[in-house]
Length: 418
Length: 176
Ligand code: HEM
Ligand code: FES
Image 1: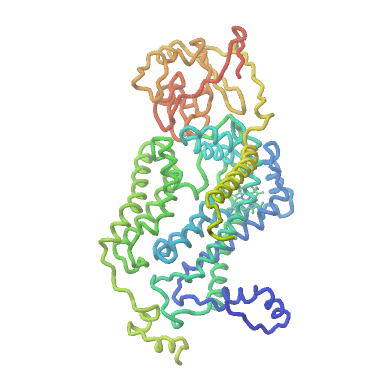
Image 2: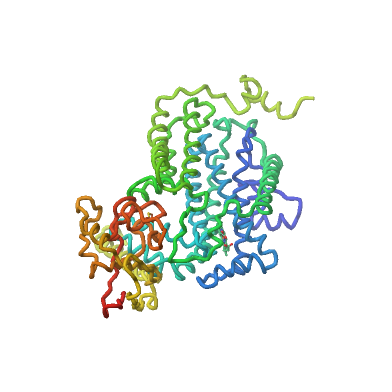
């Protein structure tokens, strides 16, 4: 890393001994970024923002929350009614989880479409899938904390997934519970882990960013940056674009928090947990629905669990399933169609996950589940062999100036003429 | 020390022995850190419960709580006993004759925990759906149990469990 010379002598003195300022300058200021990024590239920084927001509101909630089966529900109600601005902080945390998932899901589909998981970004992608898994675990345990009916039965059903493991499954579940059902020991350990895991996410996010900055962002064309003329410095160009995206995000988010705070939630969770009565219709939070649909589609307990985890596992090996050398879906006419089919399939799975497991819904769940795996395990590997891709532009600058890109011409173009 | 005087075999032995002891030490430290999550002594010291069954009339069912979970006690009708006993073993996913699941045919005592993912099946209260086999129906993912609490249809792998219980008198049973 090149040392920077800062105007402020104090900054310079510190930087000479502890080069954090040079580091930040290098990674967040001059950091060369492809100049053709679309708004889909805003979602990464938004996810980072959401994470910080969740940690800030979460720590505040923890100051007022009591992790005990006799007091948890009441303490959350107290946050809502008596703690100063408690309602606001809890609604931000509650809706924040949903919006965090919206952002991350769009971020993932962006990566799927533009082939961002391909060499040399395989590890970057895998770290991302790890973040998704950690987020799911965190959100699941957080949802248990208010100790409503959905909290309790969600915890029961999800922990019971592990009982499907042959031989040791039952002991694992008892170990997870610390008893013979979801009870106080379960609640207190979930609280401890719910506090811990976001910080583990922070750690993996740092690795994710280190991996990102090794080769820089992918871009809508999916071709490598060919030189300085293809990039612009991160600051002020993308800092301002990211901030604009943040304002749009916050506008939508604030509308949800202030006007529809319970829209994405489930009313049953405002009923205190009752271990003797399962609600007639239990559904997980919306962000788990596609996986829940896959779980229920398989008429066998172990099979259902394996397929559900398999749905994430295929993402880990995706860089080796799709071997096509062309990254961006823009130049892959058949892939593009299948991408949108997969997208529709995931939405359909989400819809089916919210429906009762009977009749036509079961049949559709099975078909949609089959399609999901068919896409990853068959379509992608076969397409990478047979698909005829469209010709790639010579460089990022080339399509803008008409295909005859030369380094000089592109560089000139950076200053608008007249 | 020159190469010639180094005894390779003895060196390897020391390395392997040290590493082994380190692994044993690490395991000894990790074990309590993992085992602490298993049920604590007070959780394990679960009292058994006594239930008066005299008041349960034929066709009626009650739910009691044992070990934090519901236990279903149903006073079965002659018709229910008859269909439970008549079930063809080949039709059962987890074959078990009705006689092995009860101490007295009219009194069925089972854990009210679906063996799929742990929801409480419906069918205890009057008016609740009882499923295709007139026993219990789990609303979570659609498991149907018969009048002996055996799994007949849906994702659950095994029959509803039978907790340990004994008759203290004709009208009182002790569960656990
Ligand atoms: C990755 C970041 C996080 C996610 C996705 C997340 C998710 C959730 C969710 C979904 C809930 C349930 C909200 C409800 O329905 O009431 C919740 C509750 C809670 N979370 Fe978090 N959380 C995160 C970070 C944190 C952190 C860092 C803390 C700090 C201790 C925290 C503390 C709490 C507390 C005390 C509750 C219970 C109060 C309540 O239910 O509103 N969370 N969290
Ligand atoms: S928990 Fe009963 S069917 Fe899944």
